[in-house]
Length: 252
Image (cartoon, rainbow, N blue to C red; front, side, top):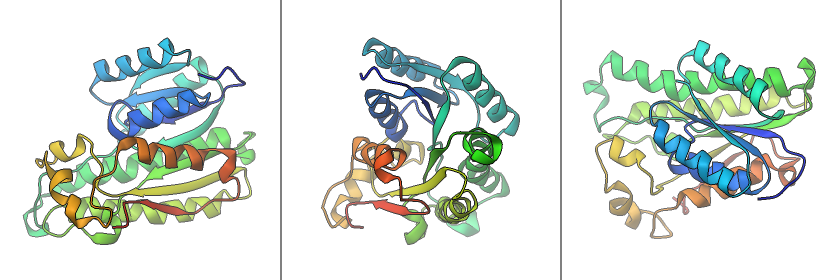
């Protein structure tokens, strides 16, 4: 781990998959990391212990991003216990079991948009209040995790998830332009088929392997490959990049 002047990056859904890979890489690059999780405290604490063992600074924080009050409390804890916030990775998200639109009930749709869309709005609002020069902040960057599903629609699997990620794409462009003069950059990444636990949570544990032949590169991606893109968009190397949506999808 680097010992340098540290700022904090919050990674929502940071205890596993793409989120965990991002936390590890960002800590390696010298950031303090706030590892948000909803239920799996053991995984979050294990990740924090690993970062600390390698000389980094990290804190696990439980919060359901769909709940605005919990999000506000999470940011207040970061204010108290970690260095200045300079980055947010809106990574927390859910899928559901494959279904057609005419089979989806209201509870499923409420959950899908509450976490995947409202959660990103709640977190971005709090981050902008801390990072924007309009609010006395010193700047920063937000990376929203979208999905290639936003372009492809995911018919007969989860159109609701695809629609939620389409909303994230639009949110990214609008917020980027809104805060462009306030020292805050906002970009998104659209991962494709990535080897993570999210497929199992949607009832398709072998989905990445089964869909690999549909990818031009003929393989699924890794969480580390997405994390590299996240780290770049958060870094000064991307200082003139805002409102961009980067596909990390093997060409699909």
